[in-house]
Image (cartoon, rainbow, N blue to C red; front, side, top):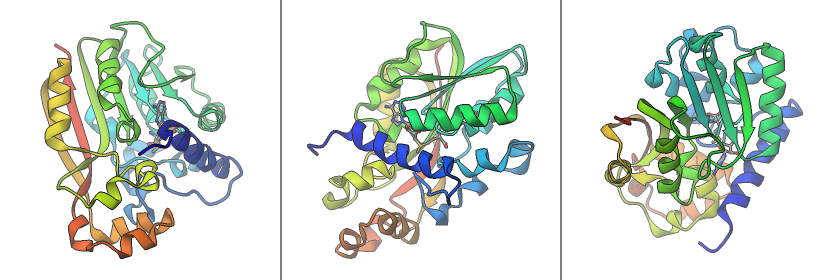
Amino acid sequence: MKVNIKNEVKSYYGNIAKRVNSKSKNACGCGSDTTNNSKLYTKDFIQGLPDEVVNASLGCANPVVLANPQKGEVVLDLGSGGGIDVFISSKYVGETGKVYGLDMTDEMLKLANDNKEKIGVNNVQFIKGYIEDIPLNNETINVVTSNCVINLCESKEDALREAYRVLKKGGRLAIADVVMLKDIPESIKQSVEMWVGCIAGALPVKEYNRILAKIGFKDIEITPVNIYTKEIIEDIAKQKNLGDVYSKIDSDLVDGAFAGAHVKAYKL
Ligand SMILES: C[S@@+](CC[C@H](N)C(=O)[O-])C[C@H]1O[C@@H](n2cnc3c(N)ncnc32)[C@H](O)[C@@H]1O
């Protein structure tokens, strides 16, 4: 894949943020309308959040339920987008805690800061940067969350190593991400559009585990929570104008090949 993936990802999510900013219908990033992003969160998590925040959700599962942030903790959300998981965590850490949201896309940061103003929270800060080069000091974070972002990175290892670096000893990684459950046709693997849609860049579970262990994470658990059926993948392909690519492949080969998963691990 010879294109600059980061620029493609920035441009794709920048356009989504602009559409949300201009109040037109939100397009899902990682999943599709059939994954129904508003259903990723049970009511208790999104209670009190404005519709603009909930509608800007582009994730693949709820990482905050896994993170279980406690009062006074410092949370970092990688690829924070419109900020949904940042705002949910901010309710749990309270005024003595803090939540950082890190994103590389200006339009997403604007959307997140507009949302912050609407909610009026003081314990939240959005910062611009790459998750492969986190602009925070070593061992300053209790819990790193992320929702459907690691799969977008070309070097997952760099991103996860950075997460490890900023975590305090005893800290935890609690992320939602798309993972690959079985091998897929080469045409999908080579598709940039399927990459920005969080499919082609997804890691096989075993490889995810291997990378986390190599970095030094302990007690690693990767649990698929939302399996993508062939209907969901077809819908994603259509939304990315990849109906042609999809029609040439045997849909049974991708049926259940991907899932939104919970990934938990500790820095001990
Ligand atoms: C699929 S969206 C998910 C947004 C948010 N986590 C959510 O659940 O709604 C991916 C986000 O990650 C950001 N992103 C992707 N790759 C990144 C990177 N390497 N560094 C920083 N941000 C990145 C994009 O700008 C986008 O806002």
